[in-house]
Length: 446
Image 1 (tube, rainbow, N blue to C red):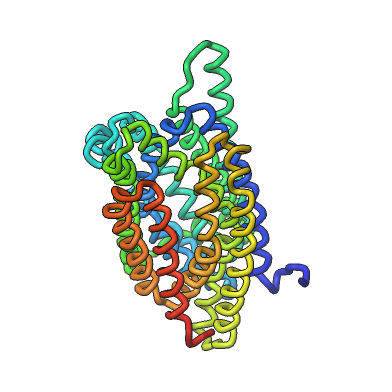
Image 2 (cartoon, rainbow, N blue to C red):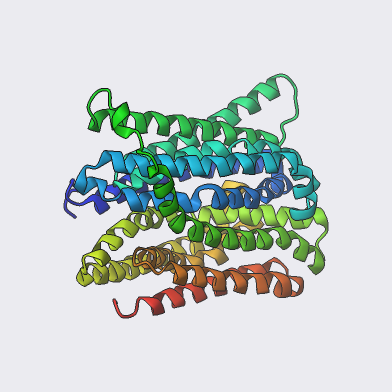
């Protein structure tokens, strides 16, 4: 393979994102092992139950806006119009921050109600209050990362990701050992505090990076150059919102259904015959131990997906059908080959990995079964990014919805009959449905 250079931003960006993605996942992976051993399966289950609220808040505040910023600053690399790209970044940032502050206040003030009536676990209430403080910080670095993704400078988002993970894990370790020295019992709340500290670090890194970027590309005393003309903020905001709102609504709907899925897994396991502690423990083992290991290789495909969108968008805009065909073909070929490799790895060594890493036999069984997801996940994720680059966001939304609805059917109707195995079957069937739909959508390019 030729060495990456400035003329091949996809390869260069993918390598940067993949290396830092693997480093972050490697750190996070052993962090999960630490949490599982300190707080047990039930503690991991409680911790994982807060994830739906965090995912919903991200979807509502900045998910769509990050993509919108990336799309509208992409021309900066050709035109060198830094004032225009800064205007889009600033307008998107202001809108997202307003929404994120309102979201933070809502979660903090109504944490008890959310814990009892939405998550159905009152012990998550204090965790939600802490988590809510991280939302504005995540909004800041997500908007800035969207800008750098758009101009194909992936080093900054990669550094933000790595710094967030290192600081979060390091802070939790420090808090844990300080408590042990003082004779205090550790609680899962430490992990949530670490999340807030990690988001703070990522925000600081992103702010320093964007300031340094504009100081480098613009002359001294560039402040007046970035001032928005009268009426420009409203015009740019409207343009961003036209793209961001549908994307955000799609993400909110999808994440809401995913939240329903996550919340009702312990509930349906209880209907199968598990007691509350066992059901929460099985959920914690599945989502906090087995799935993170299965998703570990996604650092490769995730990096490709981030950078495929602007590349395919540019090829589509210029009518370069050959480039799109090549992207589709390579996505399927490499996704399948990589997936088969990791499926074999998890199938043959899954039980050993469960015992060695988590000291949990059930985690090993989950890893073996979930390994079959790998080829399907890798193909579907890259093809989904290609479809988004072609402007087919409605299709990707519909396919994600179809996959989720299949999983929900298994959650509500199969888990009470087959237990946790019913959900594993649901994951496999739903991912197969989504992959086949994506292949069908790009068939004319393949």
